[in-house]
Length: 365
Ligand SMILES: Cc1c2[nH]c(c1CCC(=O)O)Cc1[nH]c(c(CCC(=O)O)c1C)Cc1[nH]c(c(CCC(=O)O)c1C)Cc1[nH]c(c(C)c1CCC(=O)O)C2
Picture (tube, rainbow, N blue to C red):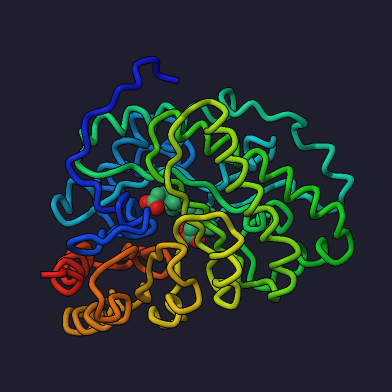
């Protein structure tokens, strides 16, 4: 880790204020997967380097993190470190290729395969490149916007480690849950423990907010989410808090994004231990607020495909979203975002228009 950890003062802390539940003059806005394939400048870098080579080279990861910040300067309120959720399975000793989607040549077929995983993960050794990328990026940002660190939720990572890649049916990882429930729970908690160390390391390196992506939370029945995913999410929120407190490092806000698990929002808000809950587009914002109460901030939730609908649709949908989140009471505890990651075919100027519309319609003025 870089030795000098003094960072430039913040010029824009809208994101951090909203995440703490405060009222803001307008909603802070960023989008999931904002550093990525819809940007021509991303392809220029990607043409010369493999995906994980970029992740493992702090200067390249910094460059890609900064691309959307430069392009949308003055409109965007957060940077998210360029990396991937699958660096945690790599740290556990698994091989992961990106061709073009994730592929694990040697997935976990049965509990016998657990012996192939590293018993003790030294995150500084295995993931120190992420910490270095965070430190140099936070410095380069010069306080323009806060820097978000992240990891995958244990259930989502478990699904990749068992399926060996992306899945439509989740048959293999669900078979694990039902055939080997105790081994599954132990593995989920083991992944959670690596996530805790990884997230604490990211905060030490300069991350100012942490997001946990449970992209496949909605694949679980409500009682299976409670049994398998929630305990590992709680282990992370509690573990990060405890470890930071023990080292006298100030806590940062934590966001959980339980995509598709809208039946679980109230329980997550009350028992999850998170400051912010990320919402997908399948719930009305006012209904989400009703479910979570005033305990947490919320983030989201425009359908990413609205960005393909042209300017009029984007403006109409953003206006509607802002009204539903604001509920007529001003903008409080809300971070504007899409309901999932931006997709590769979006015109970067249409994303700019999305940001401009959020500024206009979320303003308290
Ligand atoms: C499930 C998941 C993954 N990765 C991630 C998630 C959770 C969010 C979500 O649900 O979308 C998270 C992620 N992946 C990436 C980031 C970088 C930061 C950012 O958001 O801008 C983040 C936050 C870069 C990436 N991760 C990946 C790319 C494209 C790879 C390439 O350059 O070829 C990027 C820019 C590859 C990736 N990585 C993953 C998949 C399934 C794929 C392939 C398909 C796809 O791109 O959506 C796993």
